[in-house]
Image (cartoon, rainbow, N blue to C red; front, side, top):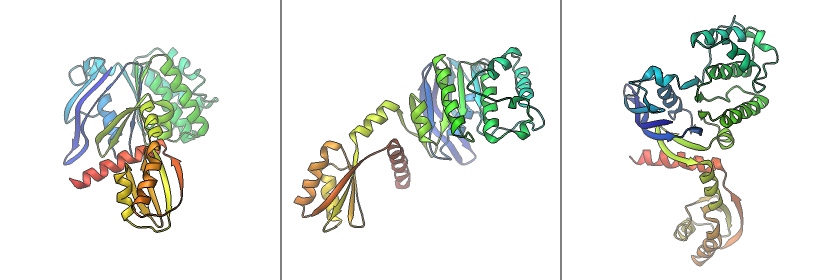
Length: 308
């Protein structure tokens, strides 16, 4: 459905997106995850044709976005991160404007407004200037749904939404998914990605550092655990013993060692530390979270960048 090959986007000497490649299947919900400044918004703008790539190729449903721009864009609907509507127009008038702009039947406004997931509570008759940030965000989502396009691209869609609005948005996305829509959204909020996405692309500093299914990330959680080991005789030597016994991470924090390993290696690690001369006073284990794994990708990429 969407093919991205060696996408690079530079602004002068600054490279916002650096040689990024991925494919998105029809009907898939695909998330671009990364910290602020990681290249998520630039990638989406390239996908929707608002920003021309410096190099690389983008295909939408087999159509080259550069050569067949008009036909490719008909497959898409886009919700930008920052929304700006004329404050004196009502929500309904704004929707009418976009309906006419895209040459859509007026009936689409009623179809979208009566979708329970938007729940404007009569606010569609109010001027935009009187709407809360969350209601403006809902208006943006409604406008993005007007074309009934097969592909929906959303940049930070849950920003400004209150908890109730976020729940309704997730229900809304589930409905679109059940209708076979292909959904691409960006976020720096891991909880949204975990609840909504089939697969996630992790971007750091404009580079693609991983593409994983949510299931694969959860399996990685099952393989990893962290131990806090209180040492009676804390010493940096025990770190090397833990690493030689299979720890993926080991560091001293005061009188405690923080060790990350596979769950089945825990007892072997403790024995190795004691064999090396360490005296374990007590220890506690804790499971990693998806956020821990996400942060590991970020730290690994940052460390690699510093080495080069």
